[in-house]
Structure formats: C-alpha cells, structure tokens
Length: 138
Image (cartoon, rainbow, N blue to C red; front, side, top):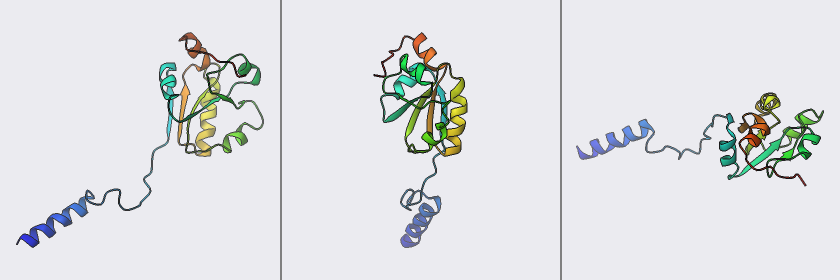
C-alpha cells in the first residue's frame, strides 16, 4: 500500500508539473515589454544594464542629452538599418524631444523583434521639466 501511495503521489507531482518544472530544458517564452514611463522611472531604469537611445536629430542631440545616450536619428534614411544591427535581447530606453517620434520608433522596434523597450513619456522636454540632469554629448 505504501508503494502504491508513493507512486500515486509521484505521478501527481509529475502530472501537475511541480516536480519537473524548469528541468525540461524548454525555452520559456517571455512576452515583449514596450512601456511608456515617467522621467523618474526612466532614471531608475538607467541604473541597470540598459542601452539609452536618443532618436532626435544631430542638432537636437548636440543641445544636451541624457547621460549615456547614443544618437540614432529617427529622420535618417539609415534609422531602421541602424536599429536592426542592435542586440534585440538587450533592454533599451529611448527618447526624443517630446515623445512624438518614439511611438513610431517603437513600432519599428516591434517589427524588428526587440524584447524590452521603455519610452520616456514626454521626451527630453519632460526630463528637463522634472529638473533631471542633462549632459553634454562630448
């Protein structure tokens, strides 16, 4: 009887997936993240392993950036190509001047298969209005 109960309990564990969960070697699908965030949240996210992309024009970029941002000009004919060369599994923080361009940029990033993208709500304008630091791109 003890063997029967032990076998039954073991079978229930296997059937429920509790015993062998995450031991199958199966790839777990993670839902992509595309989220608009406040300047404060954007700043919090900057402390992790992230890439910051400023999609403004070069002239706008030279007027001051969020520290660590690289420029990929949304209006450049190579915008999509430059994005396609980035690691799709990294976390990206993107911004423009007011937030208008980022919605289109996120659409492109979705098409290209990016997994985690956070957009600065209101762009660098909201960042400045919140009195968060602006850096020189030089």
